[in-house]
Amino acid sequence: MMIRKILPKFPSATAVAVMAFCTYPLCAQEAVTTPVGVVTVSIAGSPNGSSFAQTQFSAPLRESAVIQGIARGTVSSVTTDSIGSTGAGWQVGGLSAVGSPFFVEIRSGQASGRIFQILSNTADSISIRRSGLDANIDLTSLGIAPGDSFEIFPGDTLLSLLGTPADGVVGGTSSQFSANQTDRVIINDPANNTAITYFFDTGGVNPNQWRRLGSNANQGTIVISPRMGVVYQRISTDALQLSFTGAVPERAATMRLPRAGTTIVSRYFPTDGSLASLGLHTLSGWRKLGDSGVTVPTTDRVIVKVGSTLISYYFDATAVPAQWRRVGSGANQDTVSIPAGSSVRLIRNGQVGEFDSWTYALPYALN
Image 1: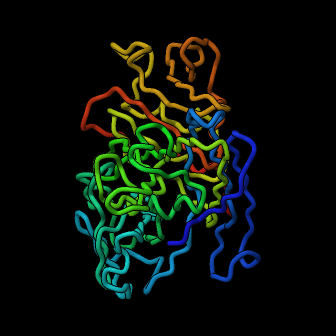
Image 2 (image 1 turned 180 degrees about the vertical axis):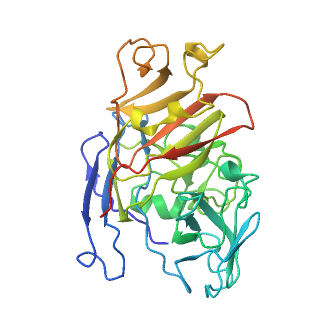
């Protein structure tokens, strides 16, 4: 996949997001009616070249699929972990090559808005990856059924999203990484939802690859799903500008959220929103002040970057009206902005192995 970005130097350390949409046929030469355009995100530069500037970002637009066979179709059969579509015409294995991930989104029916990574495929069926947030998923129990519609689209990897030092990433040896002299990128490992830190290694046994400390394996093919957020820790004083092009999401997003641990999730939609609009406080498992046995230190938290500062918020159901707050302040924080192209970190203190189903409402109308 091509790297979806441009990288001029920016003097400001403030993350920004800009949208410019247009509609077929003005911007595209394919039969789509979904608005397409660009969201630009600035990765903040270090204030002094010795301490990290931290930016939480995501890629909120969807690239068009260029595949053999259909990109949109209808489910003809479904099993625990596979979907069939008669006459789809896919190239066997063409949707599951290492370094070129594809995803399938269910577009109608009970599971509308669910997205899964494709693990393997035949000419007329796809199998999904069942790990991380989708471990133990049963497609039939989600209500996916013959007649439901779906869409296949390409995803990103660590390499396709951020590139190499030639694109502006500050790389270095493992020793330089340990000495805080390289950029760092933190994402949730799709296999187990554990936050992992990566850097671009210019030394080592096989130089010039994305790696994690302690491993010589190439990590550039690590998949970043559209629902995943990314934390970028920048050591250079120069900021990076990332430009994401593609189509806007057309429906509400639904995903599983673990009730324990840290999960980095994307803003997903290419518009600004508010902390309250995320709707996290409505989840049945969200720990909030006012729940039995829950105190402020044991509430679930949302970490948002406001200006150049990361701030932790919790939900206070004892307030009138119930509202989001930050520690040390009695002010209502419902309207705190979650910009387009950003991500948030969720720190949850619930039961390990339990999940909530989070539906993130579509924040705009499509004509």
